[in-house]
Length: 397
Image 1 (tube, helix red, strand yellow):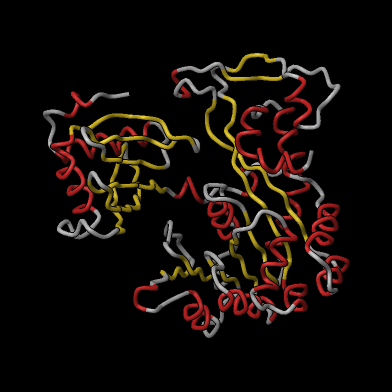
Image 2 (cartoon, one colour):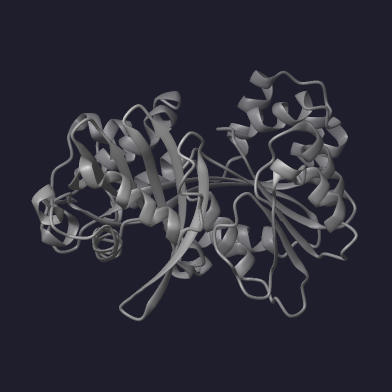
């Protein structure tokens, strides 16, 4: 970690440049600048975990924040309300897009920066962490002529990366692909990307209504937030379009019930849904410091590996991985492709408990099983799986 003395003499521009460059070198996805009484605390999010980087003297806080806001074309005089902006910077011959968010706190403005690159968000489907069967199912869903495919999972679980990677797999010359986003994370060539702006009344519903008159083949709705968006998205899928979106829920049964509660008829939910993908991200064991490790009985029981005497791996921590024992992340996915039996169950008047029990049996490979496979393959650890899937694992035990 750098110290505040490192920045005591530097200009605000030099301080910001140093923070951005070091964030890139350390593979950070986010930068947090949090004002406290005496210092501006700078932290980097690396592989989903926040690490302290440096402290900037509080007397330079306003200069540093203003420098970021100027670069992001934001109003430097406005400190009472949250603002959003963007900037670009180049390091080692590569251009990085940075999304900026500021918000007022009792000690001044807090700043969050999201570092975006095409390599981060658009990766090959083969590189997401899917096994062979899951990749085949995902490919079938992505090549369907119509229907709704939903990505679920908590914040930071890889939903956007999965969506962008799916869209990147299409032939963009022969498909009219349109996205409705708030905000647009990354510009992708060959795709018509539309920025939602609710401040002027241009919401997902109005944007979707307009897009449907633009002869699309594939539509990506960044997030289904309300009943109107849900009903219009389902209608689009039912009329012959392939629609992708995200939705905040944690199991298939809960997702189906939420849409019914939003007023979407059961028959439309049943006949429009093509599949649901639950996504999570786990850190990978650092190959530079990985050593053999004997898992405890409790860890094996948690992952359903009781009775198996196997040697596992665990990173001990080194300079390559910030002493964490992990380097990079991979995806855990639970994919449900809807069939006629599932559609019939949705149309029938079934309680959420009955639906949950039914859908649980229809999942080819649960998140818990996928996670256990990653541990057996030496990709991640039981400790990391419990950190990410704790609640899900407890529900299945």
